[in-house]
Image 1 (tube, rainbow over the protein chains, first blue to last red):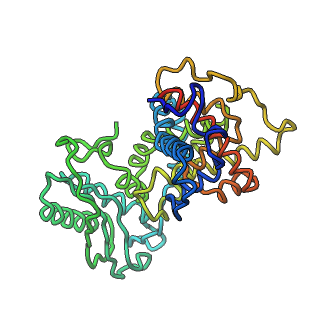
Image 2: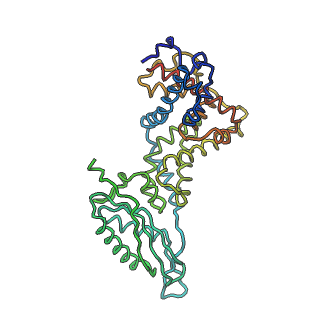
Length: 201
Length: 187
């Protein structure tokens, strides 16, 4: 559809079509949600055309890059490897959690990051739950101090939330007692999201 | 690739869940995010930088910074915009470094947009606008990307690009004029 008011090759943002307004002024007006109402803009056909064109362009903006990105080649395997190697050495290890030893000269410990990985791995063995992250509340660096474990999870629609949560709690308690000496005072599970099963779409 | 056998596949997890899990230190979850966004960030960085030379490095630096910042991220649902903000910063750092290490202000090899029919050979509106975006002078293109893709306001764009706010306003107006002309030619 071409506007009958405009000769061919003409654009709504050309100066002669703006009815005395400027692109800057009209862009600002649009950015402010057309508030406060400006009668000289609202009553001008030329300014209305320009605003409509600016709105259309804004709506198209995300599409331009998305379309280009889809057509862009995936980076090569060596790029991913370099990145993941870099990240691997910067793993978020967190605090050191002591482990008692029969040999007093040996200082054994496990990192907070390793404990979080244990918790995630427990979740990965249970259908319908994704362990997102977990937090250890308490003085984990002192042996025997009570520590509360707070876990954020997503539950998937085909899972029975209460049984999944119970299974996760028992699994985490058991895994932590096997792999650490943490004095776990409680395992709190916070459901952050109920996800639709992607296969049901 | 990154699926958990018989369990929830990380590929099916949404951005928020992946960012949350990545913040817990799971490199596999982060890798899924990287695969989801590397093309978009690369395309965006290419547009901001104006040449492909540094794009791979800039995107890599952006993801490393993202990994480091994840544990303190507040809104995991906003990961897309957050990544764009990070890659914007890395791209602009690179532009500044180029500027400092070069006598040439900036090598300008692209066509100007005021010539006719920049997009005559395009097959779709998206393609026409892509070409029109490529044809914009770098300053205009950067301002437009920071405004419309990164969502920055005038003040922030001015600050990031080291330009007066009035200049940013003018550059944005000119970029919109060129892009609307191409868009309207497709109506």
